[in-house]
Length: 282
Image (cartoon, rainbow, N blue to C red):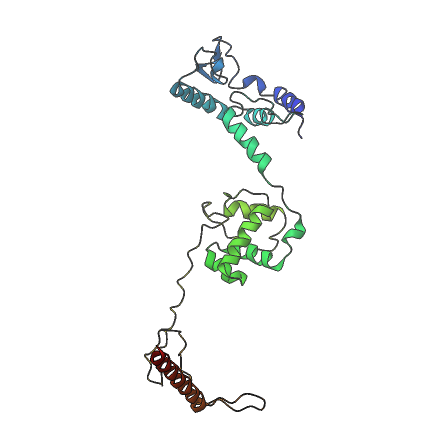
């Protein structure tokens, strides 16, 4: 953690500190030396009941930042105001410091807290990561990077995302930022990096994969037993032949269809005879 007190001292002891743009003008009291049209409260906002209208605040902040950009001690001012105190807060949480508004500086603080630290060098030692990183150094098209690295497009895109995270960069980082961080870590020694215009993202957007090859038409199988032809990929159902008799196995009762029918006829005759006897007795 940087010492905020030491940074403030370095800012105030800078040889050009007395010429800072937000200092009071010598000839016009109450006005800023960098722009006499601005009052000294242009960097902090006027103490007004009911607040400040949005358009007035935006105009005031834009004019104050314009003065900051031409200030001789802007870098030292920004370093001190955005340093972190022992309780984890900005040294100057309010107002415009170093050409940045309070909102911008708080957003930068939150982003720094959520940023992941860079991984150790051993995490980059896998052959696939090195191949994708070296391929990305000379081209940036997802398909060309994958071809040079010897992997498929999905794997190459995943490794590009993985490299961005391992280098401690946000997902919105550009290819140039990723390669600069990799060069700083010595991961691209001996590789000539091909520069782009700065608009190429480190992690490519979802890549549209080529359409898969059409599947072959289904084969229709014609039945050989006179049944209707089944639909595609349906098995042909062939009826089993009916058995006219059962095999005779030792110890199994024989099935005599004629005997069974004879027994049924005898029972029927007995029933008829009994019925006639009962009717005669009545």
